[in-house]
Length: 139
Image (cartoon, rainbow, N blue to C red; front, side):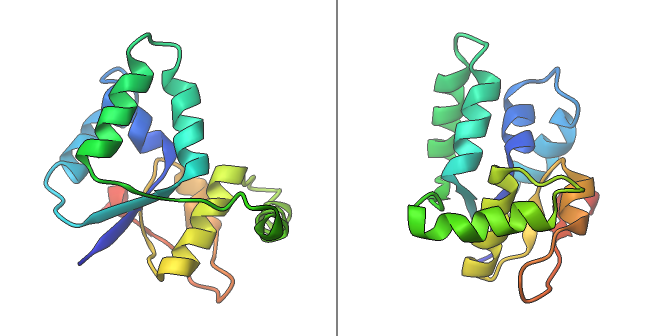
């Protein structure tokens, strides 16, 4: 089964038609029939962005359930040095915590297809073995 990683921006844009990238995200994700994976940091970040709308958190929760998203966690203390090392390596891009966890998830699942609006970041980031990302919204 094909797996796609999903970043914060597309989750927010999918739910809010006024967001840049909304139509692009909907047209790419709606026909997809594979598995979608993300991290708890991405969910937390997305909840923050949709939280200003009274129904935002509920809509995001419902979307994650409807898509049957696999949510992976990279916030255990023993793993945080890896996350921080990536953030330091890409500080000039920059890379935030959620982005770093997605890079680690890509390594863990050996998946490099990502739905993201962060074209600059994910066209620059590499997994530790040196593999880049396939930016699905560009195809």
